[in-house]
Image (cartoon, rainbow, N blue to C red; front, side, top):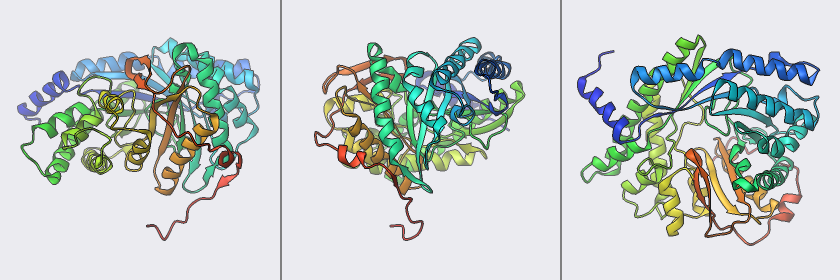
Length: 453
């Protein structure tokens, strides 16, 4: 491929001044062949397989960083949803599995490991119920393990029994990690229509239809898109969309190139490039800043949903031209704590939970890294999850909730997690109860696939 010198200089500028990076290289590992009736041997099997496949993941990613001069921020592993391969074990066994995953993650030097997960959108098996009951302690007693539970799909509807259970699980996870701001909840995602090849935490897992081992890449780049939009001279929205498409193409090409080189060196299949614009707490590396660059005074004001829809669609159009293997979540992330512009918008009062929910109807992934008062009832958290699952179910898209009832905090406070997880201002919720609705349980039926308006 012929590369013009101007393009090389442009990429160098993106890296140096516009926070361009590859957000994550994630190795997906199948653990189905590790099954054993004895928990001790089962744990040894999964530890050995993760270490066997991933022992060179970090060093290889660092070599690719040096080769192309592109920072790769996170190196991660996702594994087969544990509930699907450990159904016979009890709660203590599940916690020991989480500790084994944590030990393997530490040994290979990765940042996070995802897959302490269950798929319960149509119903829960005893093993899946046991895994969910173990999630709070598993997350409190590990550093790198992440968990996810898929409770809804467009085809199955919403499992409201699971939604009610997850509200209580999130509360317990917050309480068990209260000394760390409830960080257990920052490692737990509730999904509708969860993708099986998602490289982003905390929701990554290695799906049943995936190869034995695969490399998936998640690109970033809000700072680059923000700079490109701000350089335009009095553009109309069509020109903004065109600029975002061209920028997304360049970002995705870089991710595809780095991902394929990493998979070649590791000797495993290349999976997908996730096109998501993933912000960081760094000033300028913000999705909210892009929306404001389009002309909004502050993210969250009227017009924000439309601007986000334009951004999301343009990123997908540009990115899909740059790679034949696009997957994962692929859209603009709007995690409050991880986006300096979102944090500022909440603090100045232009962005609230209701507007965030509206924005999730046009982008991935959903209500992400949102802190609410620590005394929020479990039923209210379940109702917030149900609302978000309904948006995903009806609109045939992935949505998710990663919410933190910050222990001891109330509206006006903030909770600090550090690093990429950032700082979450505590947002207000409705005072009115949803308890009777959530208590009804059952399954909300799947939507009709015709008559869509």
